[in-house]
Length: 311
Ligand SMILES: [Zn+2]
Image (cartoon, rainbow, N blue to C red; front, side, top):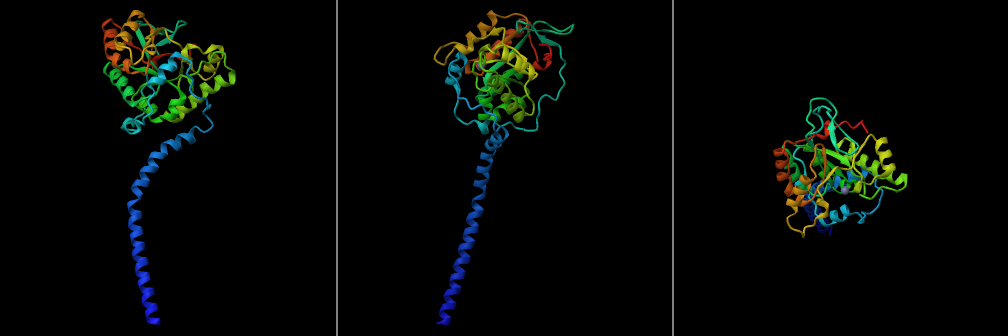
């Protein structure tokens, strides 16, 4: 009896031991998957922590023409892995750019010092960041033409895709503040306007390490309060002086890229502050547009060369 019990106990131990080994083997197989999950989750949780209490919580309005166009092109798919910058330690803004330009009352960019060309344009792209393909497409063309631009971003989009904001910064382009929710700020209560502007300042700084110095109100309608709060935050308030009308087009209409080019050329003048958007037809149009601008003798103002202290 004792022998049998002892034998059973021994067997049980062996079985338990074997189970234990099996279990350990299983656990060894698990960590890679868990590690992936942790990595996948990490950026989201970091963003949430980094911006807790920041989001105004408003839903995206659909009232403005710009926003309506945004919605049709709003991509819900996660482009995270494709859009991740090759190197995270490539920081832009380290090279010194001479301040040689300022903005005038008509939102044109004009020389602030002697001896620089006044035949310039400022390139701007609003309402992103949306998709890595479009951002890379725009910046590939900008790089080809040695051009810099301002990407005016919305805070809620940065919260959704912080990696896309990093992509813009890592590729050496300038980021501007375009409010959090893309709502019409004019006639909104001061506290709301302040949240729209300052929360966007905060999330951009938290994401790329530098707060914007340019502010463009949605639909160009910031009102006196928007101007005041922009100034308090060290932001240069601007609308535009040459609208490409790319936001009036849809994917159903044909020839959009040609229309973007002709619309800009029709309004072209020295110092043109050109309003464009992160839209497929604008990505398509950009190479032709920049080539035509260059052939007419225009160069592209580096946003970093604009004096943001002259309001
Ligand atoms: Zn906009």
